[in-house]
Image 1: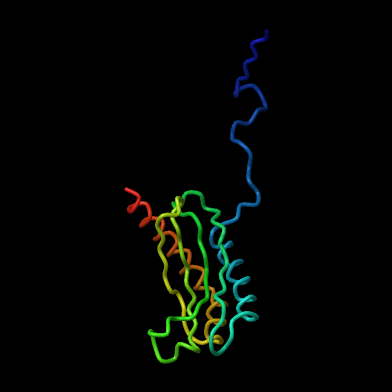
Image 2: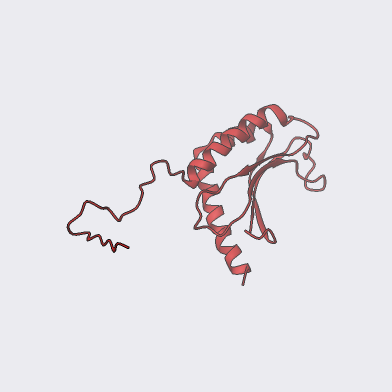
Length: 145
C-alpha cells in the first residue's frame, strides 16, 4: 500500500472545486415562465365568458429557499366577486411548502384579457414575483415550526 500525500504548496492541484458556468437564477426562470404563460394565454384565455384555467409550474433553481412547487395561474374570479366577472381575469402565484402541506397564494395582476397580456410583458412583474417567492419562503419556514 502506498501512502500518497499532496501538498497544496508544491503541486498544481486546485482545491476550489468545479466552476459552474450555466447557473440559472430565479429571475431568469420567472421571466422564461412568464413568456410561456403569455403565449399560452393568447391562445387559451377567452376575452369573454368562461375558460379553463391556465397553469404553468415554475422550476425553483434557488435551493436556499424553503419552497416546493410554484405555480403561475390565470383564472376567472368567482361569480360573487363582481358584476364583470365574465371579462375579468386573475394572474395568481401559488407557492407550496416542500412537504406540500401549506401554501401561500397572491393575485399579482387582474383585468381583462388585453390588460393581463400587457402585464405579463412587464419587466417589473418578474421582480414582484421573485420578491413574493422570497417572502413566502420566510412565511413557510415560520409555519413549519
